[in-house]
Length: 306
Image (tube, rainbow, N blue to C red; front, top):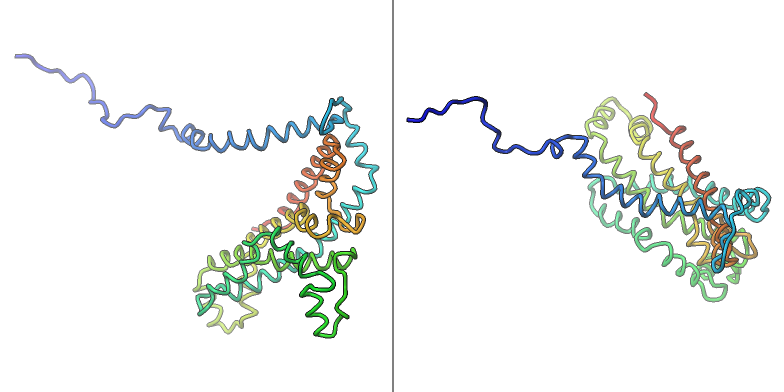
């Protein structure tokens, strides 16, 4: 009779290789597809754009390496700095109204009252339609002789009904700003509404029992607890405004002259109209750096204090 001697513990039935159970390695494997995606579609094109910015790369033909020549030309380009000033002005005009209107809309639809879902859909619909479609609609409705804008204003006795909105720089800017505030406030509403719904209801009930009115509850509870959400909304709004292109391209093409030309429109003109891809790449790199600095400053100013 054979006797079996146990020399060690039995092996685990569900033993897995250590490489698959190590937390760091598992996390790396799970994020590897995203890392590859970012490397191929973000880092590699960015590196190539930096290289192009150091050349006089044309759209067609040979190119030469010119070092920092394109960046030196940026500093002495008056059209570029005019477009920067206009973009900053446009950003300053639309940022606060988008936040305020988005907050008001979020207050209106944050509860589960009757028709709240319908109002959420209506308020968010312009953002879903998209800037391109909305811009073409505004082109039609801003026509001097047949547009609804002039018809309504004439009926109210504000204008004579023949205003050429898109042929004047300040008027075109005002019309675009109104359209953008109307179109983008729905996104801010959704962001703020999500933050509001995350605030515990018993906090409001306790404040109400202590005699706090609606405005006191909003000022002392809602606004402080929405600080991070408001900061994110502002960052998204500012970045979107600094990168504004679609509405200006469809409505004014930067005109009349260069009165409504944004930075991105100027980059487009240099790259695909004047066929100077090297110079356009240098402008793009400068814009990326500026937006990064602006975003970092926003996060620093709006970060939550302990």
